[in-house]
Amino acid sequence: MAEITDTAEVPEPGRSSDDKKPRRGGKRAKKGPLARLALFYRQIVAELRKVVWPTRQQLATYTTVVIIFVLIVIGFVFVIDYGFSKAVEFVFG
Image 1 (cartoon, rainbow, N blue to C red):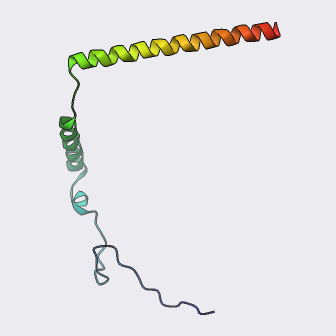
Image 2 (image 1 turned 180 degrees about the vertical axis):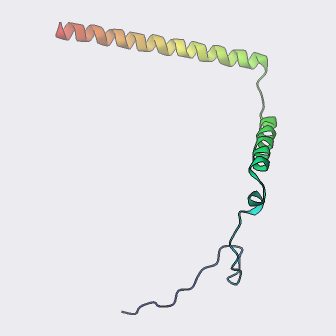
Image 3 (image 1 turned 135 degrees about the vertical axis):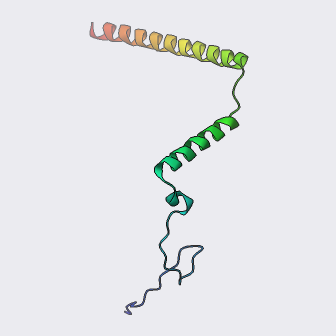
């Protein structure tokens, strides 16, 4: 069986095999922690500006639907729980 003695290093994508400099992380490595924090908050504000916010009428509608759904689920769980408690009481006395 033949042994492989020479290994060829595979360069990272976008880098030649002659480039031996370690990667530094791009622009982020050059900024201090406060600059990175400021950039983070600017990006948050930019993303929040893209959000389509509901109108007051839509918000009221969505809230009403959620409250009604929760009340229906509460009623369903109550009925199931009551039924199981009566069944257990009947079986075990």
